[in-house]
Amino acid sequence: MTTTIATITSVAIAAVITTAGAAVMNRSHNSTTHANLPREATATAQLPESTAKQSSARTYMKPSDSELKKKLTKLQYEVTQHEGTETPFHNEYWDNHQDGIYVDVVSGEPLFSSLNKFESGTGWPSFTRPLEPENVRTRTDRKLFIARNEVRSAHGDSHLGHLFEDGPAPTGLRYCMNSASMRFISVDRLEAQGYGKYLALFGKTPKMKAGK
Image (cartoon, rainbow, N blue to C red; front, side):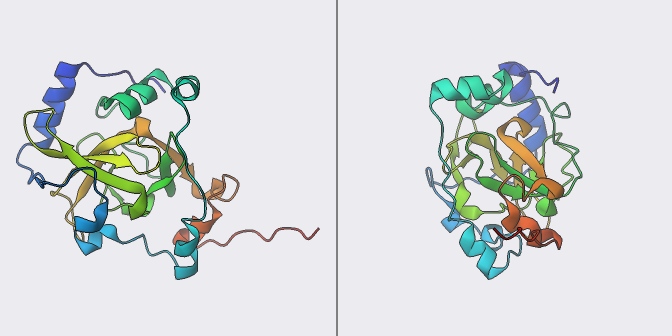
């Protein structure tokens, strides 16, 4: 991965250009879950009921800062822990078209599915809705002199990106994420990585484990 951290000036310019003309969500909530968002935005990507119930069974935790500095790259640490922004069109997943899910690079909690990914033209990976709404939170961010909705992971408290109301149907939302905040797990690796419950989303079934 050859991406580098964009300077504050270039990031601000890129973000302003990207979001120009967008209907930015400007709500007064602070550090909330998706309870206040449209119902379409809070739906999982059609997980079977039994599978959806299993999603909360696994515990996701944020490692200590010292562990994070060892585990993450410089870019991943800057983005997730200091609200950095990676360079558009020069990041790992902006044009990734593989089937699979995206999890928090810090905690491993499932965030988004490739089934809800779309080409936004911004140079950052964009999604219409989260895979697991309870793993995604928003809070008001005014760093660029306008109110934007910052998106963070619920358990890892990682900065993921921002949420805008200029996305495609059915939600009309655009979750504009940083590749550095996420880890992609392809369908053929889901079960081995401990995310076999999501195979059903892609028409797959877990392999039968051999008896003892």
